Amino acid sequence: MEQKIQLKESDIPRQWYNLAADLPTPMLPPLGPDGNPVSPDMLAPVFPMNLIEQEVSAERWIDIPEEILNILYRWRPAPLKRAVYLEKFLDTPARIYYKDESYSPPGSHKPNTAVAQAWYNKEFGIKKLTTETGAGQWGSALAFACQIIGLECKVYMVRISFDQKPFRKIMMQVWGANCIASPSNETNAGRKILAEMPDTPGSLGIAISEAIEEAVTDPSGKTRYSLGSVLNHVLLHQTIIGLEAKKQLQMAGEKKPDIVIGCAGGGSNFAGLSFPFVSDKINGADIKIIPVEPTACPTMTRAPFAYDFGDTACTTPLLAMYTLGHAFIPPPIHAGGLRYHGMAPLVCQAIVEGLLEPRAYHQMDSYSAAMTWVKTEGAIPAPETSQALAAVIDEAKKAKEEGKEKVILFNYSGHGLMDLLGYDAFLSGKLVDYELPEEELQKYTKVLENLPKAEMRKSGKW
Ligand SMILES: *Cc1c(COP(=O)(O)O)cnc(C)c1O
Image (tube, rainbow, N blue to C red):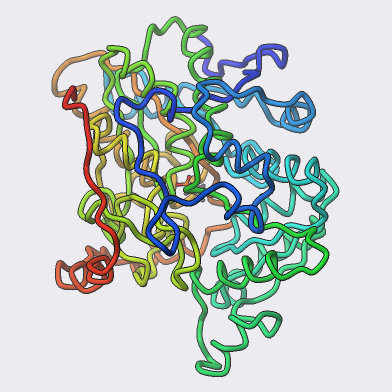
C-alpha cells in the first residue's frame, strides 16, 4: 500500500468547481449601504472585473488558465497521504487520508488563491496589490505570488504581530513585498487611529481599512486590493484541493470519504477540500462534512446568521453569514488564522441548508491533538490545522468504538514552523482554554440589530 498518492502533473484539475451553481437554495446577495444588492460596478475600484465576474458567477465549472497551472506546478498536484502511523497509534479501523497543503513555498493552502488573484490582476493591467495580514500567512502567500507574477505588493500587518512575530514579515520582504505595521502614517484611516490611540496594537479590521484605502485612492487607477479568504472567488480557487483529492482517493481504491474535515477561519481551506464532496452529498452521497473552529471564536457553532460587514470600519458590503459582529475582538488564541468574526457566505449557506456539521474545539485539545500528530506522523502542524486534527482523532476513536471502517479525509492546511511560540507556551504550561462567555457574545452581536435581517432559507432535504 502506498502512503503517498501522487497525481501526475498532466492529471491536475483544469477547472475550478463553483458550489454556488449547485446549492439547493441560493445564497442571499451582498447588500450595499442603501440596503440594495451591490452591483458588480460598485466593486470595481476594489477588485479587477475578471475576479468580480468569478465572484458573482453561477457557472458550475470555471477554466483554470494554463498560465496559472504553470505557476502551481511548483508544488501541485499536492500529495494525498495516508496517516498510517496515526491510525496505528489510535488502533482504529478508520483509514485516514489528508491533503498536504504545507508543501507550497509559503507553507499553506493560501498561495492557491494568491497566485490566481495576482495573475487575474496582472491580466487586467493592474500594477500593485494591497492587502492586510494578521500573523502573516496571507501576506507571505501574496508576496510570493506577486513576485513570481511581477506585481508590486504592499502588506499592512497588524502592529502587534509585526513586532512580536518578525519571521513572516521577513519572508514577505525576501519575496520583495513592502510590509508595514498597521495602523500606519500612510493612510487617513491609519493616521486617524494613531492620533486617537498612539499605542494601539492594531487589528485586522484597521489593516483592511488601510489596504482598501490605498487601493481605491491611487490616482493612476492601477492598484487593487486582495483578500485571502471568505469571498466566493477565493473559495473557488481553493477547490483544486478537493478535486485533486477526489482523483487520488480513487487511485487509493476508495469509493468515497465517509467524513471530510477542515479547520475554518474564513472558510477557504475547508471549502477548497470539501465543496466537491458537498456536491456529491447534494446528489445523494452519504458524507459527514465537518468545519472546525475554536471555542474562543465560535462563529458557526454559536453566532447568529445575519447580515454584517466584513471589516471593523464598516466599509465592505453587507454579507449574509454567521457572525460574531464586526466589532468582535478575538481573544489571543494561537490559531491566529481562525479569529475572524465572520465566515464565508457560501460555507454559511451550506450550514443553513444542513449540509455541514460545524464543531468547536478548545485550544488545549487542539494542541494535544497536534502533539499526537507530531509523535506519530512527525511533522509540526500549524495551530489552525491542529483544530482539524482534534476532530480527526475524535472521529477515528469513534470509528474504533463502533468497529466501523470509516474513510476520513482532512485538509492539512499548513505547517507550524513559523508558529513555534504557541508550542513553547503549550510545553511550558502557559496555555489556557478560552470559551467565549455568553454575555460577550450578546454584547458583540448587538451591532447586528440595526442591520438588515438575513432570512434562513433552506430546501429542508438535510
Ligand atoms: C489562514 C489559515 C487558515 C484559516 O483560513 P481559511 O480561509 O479558513 O482556510 C487555516 N490554516 C492555515 C495553515 C492558514 O494559514
